[in-house]
Length: 310
Image 1 (tube, rainbow, N blue to C red):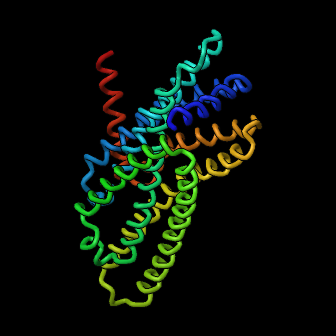
Image 2: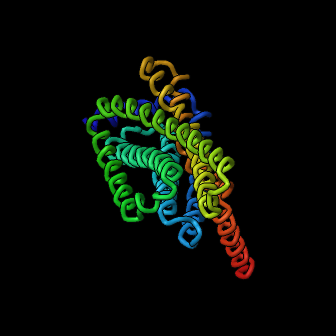
Image 3: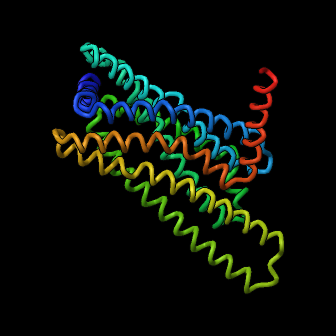
């Protein structure tokens, strides 16, 4: 089954190399460039999160998990995709047989790509529901959501991603259908979580304005949780913008595999998924002043060291 999966994957790539060489070259170059952006950006974010003491421990763990997933995308799946694309272009120009890539190369690349896509998807969903708990139970949040419980959730999340990727390699058709259904459910639940967050935030705002007896500490805590929820909303919006096009593009291509424009759209949507890992560090720096200041200091230190070495 894995070899059949690899053969169909190789057929996609060969079609693109043969009929859309300029697009494939651009796909290759962009993946090389943004692989570097994702790697450097998420390394800086992870360092900033490790050094920061003002971000709550639970939020820090969740953001670190998502940043690690994005780092792995830049270092593994996106870089592998770029290298495979470059080698395919070279071999196609020389007239070499591209069967070299099956079964090992493309299967390994597919495994890591699927694993990290699932991990990112689950991370974003967990962050959304964590923020929902924070605004809904802001007085009991620290009691309900402890660092140990968050660690257990994250370990389960990564184990689920590994198992899902393994099943995808050996049962691609069944898993693709299940993944499509689960993805839609996940998108709906995440959107529902943020709608609920908005309603809870509006309720708290009205309560604060109408009841002067509320203590300042409660007001400040509610404001912090509101701000944190809005920050995570931007992460989810960017994620959805990058991931949503992949599903309809994949469905389009599966309905007519002979249509090259559908295949081009499929690969463009794949690049958008990779691009999400490069955009997230900018979102963190924009929405979290603590991360932004730490990243600035790290960049200044890097340039200062380079100036001294030269």
